[in-house]
Length: 260
Image (spheres, rainbow, N blue to C red):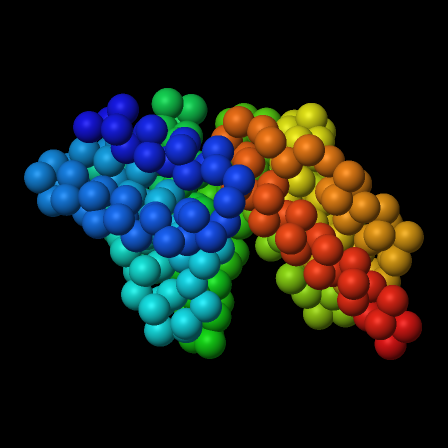
C-alpha cells in the first residue's frame, strides 16, 4: 500500500498538464480514502492522503466551502499521522503556544516527513479558513513547526520548509510586525537548496517579498527567470508548470502594480 500511495503522489507531482491532474486527482483522493479506511493507523498512508488532499485543494479548489471541507481532511490525516508517535503534540496543538512549543521540539529527524506533512497541511487548513480569526491565531505555532524542521535539516525537501517560512514571514509589512528581510533569506535559501529548480519559490519570492517592499527590478527578474526555465523536474514538474502560469500573470500586472 505504501508504494502505491507514494507512486500516486509522485505521478501527480511529475505531471505537466494542470487540467489532467485537476480532472483526474479526485479519483486518487477516493482511492487513498479507501486505503486509509482499511488501515487507519498507517502513518505512510495518512501522510500520502494529507499530501494529496492538500495539493489538490491548494491548486484547484476555488469554492471556499469546498476548500474548507477538503482541507479539514488533509489536516486530519496529517495530524493523525504525526500524533501516533507524538501524542502529546495533539494534546497541546489546540492549547497554549508555550505548551505546544515544549512538545514540537521533541520531534526528531526520523519523523521529519510526518512533521513536514503536519505543518504543510495545517498551513493549507488556515488558508482555507482565513476568515476565521481563531485559525489565523494558530500561525505562530505553524512557524514553530517549520522552524523545528529547518533546525533538524535546513535543506529538507529541497528547501520547501524554507519556502513556507519565507511566505509566513512576508505576510505583513514591517509596520505591522512583519519580517520581510528574514523572509527574503528563507526564499534565497529555498532557491539554493533546490538548485534553482523549484520555480514556485521564485514566484512566491516575487509575489510576497518584492511586491511587499516595492522592488520591481527584483520582481521582474525572478519572474522572467521562471518563464525562461524548463519546468520539467522530478517531483516538481506540476508546481513548476503552475509557477510559470502564475509568473505570466504577475508579469502582466507588474507595471500597473508598481505604478500605484
